[in-house]
Image (cartoon, rainbow, N blue to C red; front, side):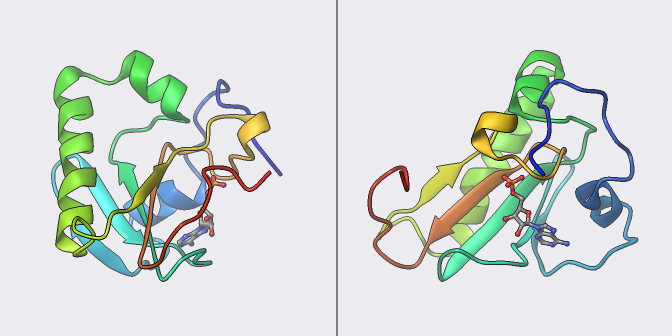
Length: 125
Ligand code: AMP
């Protein structure tokens, strides 16, 4: 069920539980600002999620409320993860769903990194 990008933060969402260590994940990277792990239902040979450590519902929430250090740290982490995954030479796609029209399912801001094959057109339909 898609979620609103603008509602209050639900501290029991699945990514909050992963951050607290209550649910396991296949971690690929972690630093002060971000955690990255493999998507449980991969849509490409490489499909990794990068999430900020702070409690932000969506990109809208993160971009409006996160500190400059959190925003810089998070996006540097996204780049570092893609680099560490060996995707820079072939290229990759970043995607962040925001709110109902996008189909966002998990109400904790996250960026998807897709790679490992030609990714086709930007949008499926
Ligand atoms: P979105 O539709 O942008 O909110 O994407 C949510 C993503 O989280 C989907 O690609 C799911 O497959 C993924 N996901 C949901 N639960 C887990 C989990 N426990 N571990 C890893 N990925 C998950």
